[in-house]
Image 1 (cartoon, helix red, strand yellow):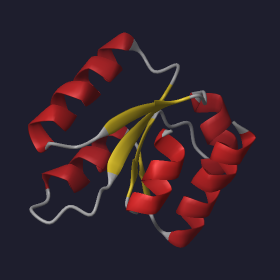
Image 2 (tube, rainbow, N blue to C red):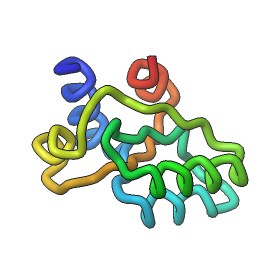
Image 3 (cartoon, rainbow, N blue to C red):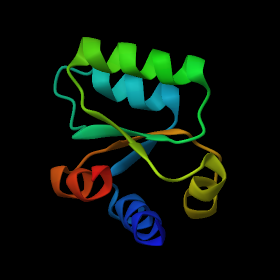
Image 4 (tube, rainbow, N blue to C red):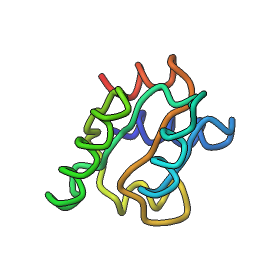
Amino acid sequence: MNNKLNTIGLCRKAGKLIGGFDAVFEELEKPKSKAAGILIAKDISAKTKKEVLFRAQRSNAKVAEIDCTMDQLQQVLGKRIGVIAILDEGFYKSLSN
């Protein structure tokens, strides 16, 4: 898990991460979205998870749940987030496994 948090921090520093429910779905609605996939924290609410899965399906976006809590993501990203989009396929593959 620490390795995944480090990779998420690296994504942020590289500018390959969008954080937050609204920002992620704004990106997915763009005609030329750069999102490789969506990652959700293991402790997001059932309602939020359902909404993410619904919207991702409409956008044909990949979704994976990561073994990190929103508090752990907050330590890396600086704010409490449960939904992030990864803008690089290599980063997304390493985080979604």
